[in-house]
Image (cartoon, rainbow, N blue to C red; front, side, top):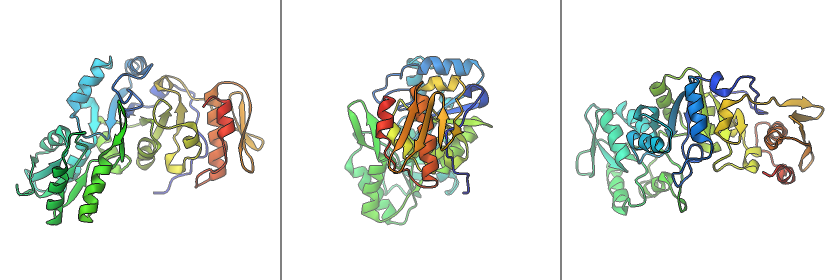
Length: 343
């Protein structure tokens, strides 16, 4: 895919909730914390965007919970949500499988209820054993209690030549007590045992983006996420715009070092950024200015002068870093500049 390399965050005179018809929102680190509690300003911001006519869709790589369970959780947090507003990697992989196997085919499931619901929705029959005559294997996050015997079952079936599908390959998953192994770690176990490679559906790959567009009918979507390697790269692969919020896993240093496929269209602190325009970053001599800040790329460091809103300084630094890096990754030290911004 050929795309223009982004060298700075974009500006917008209109509120993003007005400029785009649909927000494709990640959940963990964007709408709620890993422990399940809503992030500050999330519920109010989403309510305002919805009242203004923006369609809200919640897009998650976590295949464990079916959409109605996710919708119920969001509703409890004060974010009224229907099951049809939730798109999961389980749904994306189920569609991918259904396009390659006969209707009503049996599929060996290594994962949770979300996979089973998604397969039935596509007219496929979930089974639990390699001896149940499945025609394919699908693997998704099954929670902390998924037993080792399930990986063995997948390995037996794949060794017999069955095609293997994975909902996603995120190596980690955040939880209330910290970071735990994700579905990607479980996929690696089966990969080691079989030497096979799965077809993967979840973010940042095209099947997930296709699923969201098919289910939402979005004509001008905005991906909203906190992860560069799933949310923002997924938007890049889908050739749509993105908003990175800083309430999750991405920090300032990672953003400055982002390669082209990880550079968001917009950057803001939290979901309130959907309700406002975005300041323009402009060239200023040998550097870039946003608000009261000017950033330049030196021989070894990113330099920052001026004063104002911290986010404006970060946007200016992004422009200096990304322009310096071109199609690569910026290796200049931005630590001092970020510390000045409190980031």
